[in-house]
Image (cartoon, rainbow, N blue to C red; front, side):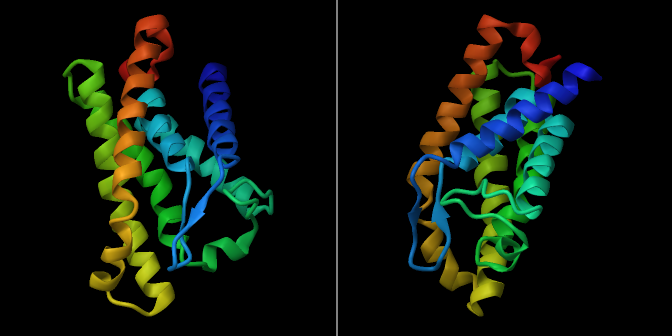
Length: 180
């Protein structure tokens, strides 16, 4: 139990630290950040349940006003911005990524990369596009054009998440809680 809490807190901090990587804001008001890789890693390393809990802890700290999102954003106002769909999708994305790694018994690199793509891209884009469209009063088709800007970077992040997860599995197999 104590080990799980430590890992959850550590990965919530990892997401926050990835917020220090400079962001690039798209015309629609949603920034491209490194934090989505933290979401992917929460799932692929910690597993579905712990990964989602780490993200929920991070979001709770953001809601309390800590400026942990990329660009130093925080507080309840971020949940009324075009990014709201992505924020709501964060814990679900981590859960899906972790579930794929837990259930699919392929070697860790393809399992973690697939989990990162499915959770950190497919699921996150579904929530993000919906929130983005609602907040801007646009159709899903209109915001899908904006989502294309995310794809190349997110594919790189998904592969990096797979490689990091594999490195953890090789160096310290017991630390890979998604396969424990």
